[in-house]
Amino acid sequence: MNKGILCIVGRPNVGKSTLFNRIVGKRIAITEDKPGVTRDRIYAEGEWLGNHFTVIDTGGLEPEKEDTIMDNIQRQAQIAIETADVILFVTDGTKGLTSTDREIASILRRSGNEVILTTNKIDNPDKNTDIYDFYELGFGEPMIISSEQGLGIGDLLDEIVKHFPKEKIESDEDDVTKVTLIGKPNVGKSSLINNILGEERVIVTNIPGTTRDAIDSHLEYNDNKYIFIDTAGLRRKRSINENVERYSVIRTLTAVDRSDVCILVIDALEGVTEQDTKIAGYAHDNGKAMIIAINKWDLVDKENTTYREFEKNIRESLGFMIYAPIVFISALTGQRIPKLMDLLNLVNNNYSLRISTGVLNDIINQAVLMKQPPSEKGRKCKVYYGTQVSVRPPTFIIFINDKELMHFSYERYLENQIRTHFGFSGTPIKLEFRQKGK
Image (cartoon, rainbow, N blue to C red):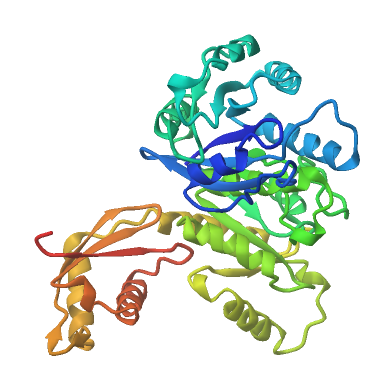
């Protein structure tokens, strides 16, 4: 799923952060009646009428002001503007049109992006007479809102989602598997893609963060078509010094959204880190198929138990994705790259695996006989039947008598029984429980 990207810009203290919080439905951005509070781009997921999108909040723009902090804010906002599908230009209706608004409008016109002009802090539109001054900015009629009061937000969101790019239906890519390489900087993602492609397609250096944007590479391997997406690595927040690195996080998450299979590349010399866990968790939560590739395995001093101990540590650190196969590779020497490609084919097939209702219910009935469902206060959970409703990831609906009687431990038991019989290596599976008749 390709999500649209909305960027909120404007001069300081026009209510951008309050509007950001309104759109995403959470108090994420710091809101304070003081200019310059939001100094970094903040991003979150928004949703309106089934349209999912990424919202970027930016620091206030003051093009004529010269100081280090303001320069950083302007560069960050410029990066956000360049990647946005829609720019929401926020002005302050209580202050009227300013010279800074005019300068920002000039910057936005040069960007060539879709711009929606909105005038904020209008609690009573009938009493405002300065609203027409904003026509001068050249973006048509401004949409009148009050982000503090929540007035006009629905109409504004209706207009925003109209301008997001529609999903592209490309028949020549129907049978193409999109594969995203994720992980920290400098773990060898670019080297791995170059090895797979057999050409120097992606810049490879030992400087972390060389890859700033997601890069697509096409490959046909054993009659299977792939698009490999190399992404900028995710760093710890305190290690992010350059503005473009913050933007790279959004690129990585967007690449994961586009993908079918994610390959988590881990440095064998460092092991699993907190950042590995976070990005793997994002992919898992979004139902992506997963492979764990331990790179630079050729540089590890090995003993008889090295492999088993390393695998055990990985399973403990990434316990939420026990289904993901692990392969030990070297992007530099090509060690086990063919095995990685075979795993990729297996995992992708499992991601699309569909089980007939009859066979599924044979497994469910057998599981129930082996271990009875939970009961509470004399009431027993009854499992009636199940059916698979979708793939990528495989999703099952199981009908029961009362959802409140179903325990998490029994959900996990049923999932394990399904995996025991059908494998599903490399793919999460989803179980949804519904009360019969509802």
